[in-house]
Image (tube, rainbow, N blue to C red):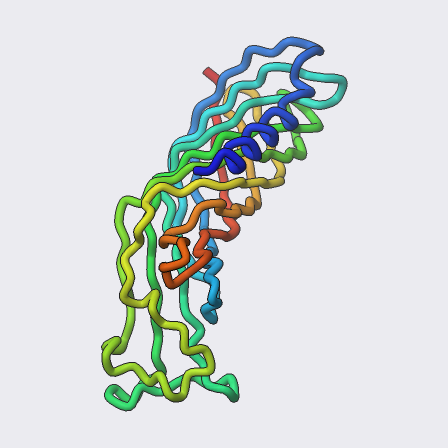
Length: 242
C-alpha cells in the first residue's frame, strides 16, 4: 500500500467522522449477522470483456452508536465477512456472438471465483427514528480483504481455446493465479433501517466497493498495469443491542 493510498483512506475516514465530535452522547453497542449477494468484476488494463460475477457475502456485524448531532445519529460500523468475488468473461466474436470452441462444440465460458475474508470499517450516519421505526442511513470508509482461496469454472482447455474468433484476445488472466492476496479499497453504501424495541434492528443496504490494490503485479514487466476488484453488494443485516 502506497503512502498516497494510506493518506486517502485516512482522510476519508477522518472527514466522515468529523461531525461526531459534539452533540448528545450515545453509548449503544449492537452485534449481529449479515448476508447478501455480491456482483463483482476486475478492472483489467488491458481490458477483458466481462459480465458480472455473482457470489454470496455474509458474516458478523458490530455497530457502536456514539453521538446524535442535531438530527444525525453518528456511529462506527464494522463487519467480518466471507465474500465471493471475481470475474466472469464475456467471450464474444466481432459480431457479438458467443465464441464456439472447435473441440467441444460449445460456447466458451470462463469464470474465476475469489473467496475473500473482508473487514470494512465505516462511518455510519443515519436520520430518522432512533429506537422504533425507520431510519435512512449512509456509510463509507476503508475496506480490507485477504484472499482465502480461488477456483475456476470453465468448459474449455486453455491450450485449445478459440482465440481466432475472439473479439477480445486478452486471455493471460485465465492461467494466472492471484499474486497479491491482500486487498484494500473504499466502500460506500446507503439503505434503510427498521428498529423494533426489545427485538433489534433490521438493515437493508446497497453498497459499492472500489479496490485500490491489484490482484496481479503492476510493474512495467508485468502483463497487467491494473487489475483491481470492484462491485456492488445488496445485503440484509440484523443487529441486537447489548
